Image (tube, rainbow, N blue to C red; front, side, top):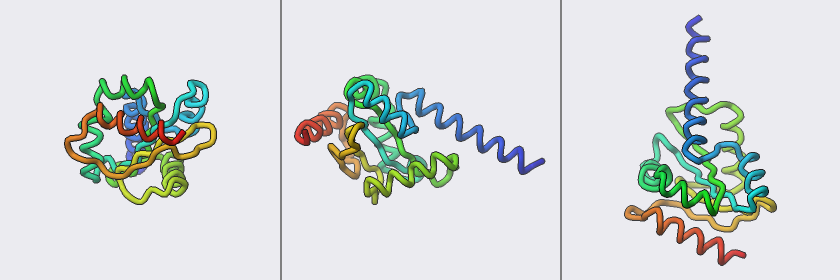
Length: 152
């Protein structure tokens, strides 16, 4: 009985955290992100992070990615996708497998890493690791906009 209660609580936590990311404008389903990108003719901006252990990831999240103004502006240009690799939070098996596969596919070796892809070909349009303190939402977007533009 205790085991099934723990399992139910863990499943609820995963569902709630996935729902919060989606509610905040960030998707966690790569297939859906690509489909939406194709439909809207927008590239997919993917953030690979360790949300509960990676200090630069936590700063990037807090200072830029979760800000309403950033989400509103970025959503006009990109489909927002988050691939998280937490240590203290359990992801569902499917989500964990998806994120592991994406890290291998896009050669993710450090966190945070931002990758922008074409949703049709999955070709990398921009890729960068790390987060410089003092970066603003505006400069973050301008930086990736320029990289994407120069890749076309």
